[in-house]
Length: 178
Image 1 (cartoon, rainbow, N blue to C red):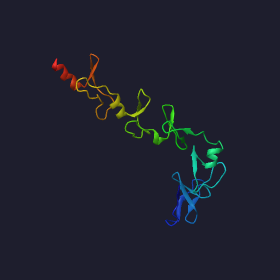
Image 2: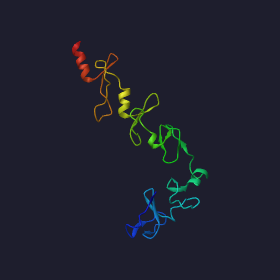
Image 3: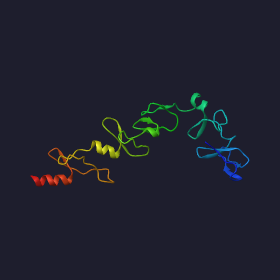
Image 4: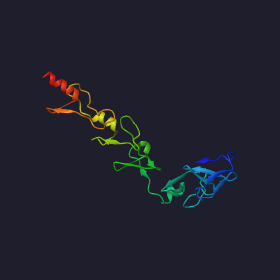
């Protein structure tokens, strides 16, 4: 939430709460990227003024801390699968589990996977696509280097012969040695 600087102009914009003009001589605030008169930024349950106080939003409705936490007007808080703490704001659902968006990360590089493609290993751990390929990729029987997708691709190309994996280049070299 941000207090408005009343010295910048005569007209701030329209209040999200009442749709009326917010003028320079009126107290106003910004919350969630929207403009409110101080008198319009209130709890949707008890109408308590929320300017400068903790508040929560669920499905577009605004709640004071007491109504959010204790009145049962909100869905029950979920526990983050990763950190074990309650999720009091946005819940990220993945793999049928709940996470804080900041906790949903690759177990190898710790990169955030919010909105990113990911893969799950046989150990049920979450990986970014790049690290998943590095860890799960078969090793080439000739050079012992993982067989990974080429840059910009999600599929790797390999030759399988006599239950052994090869890079295409390594297999043609192995055939020439025979």
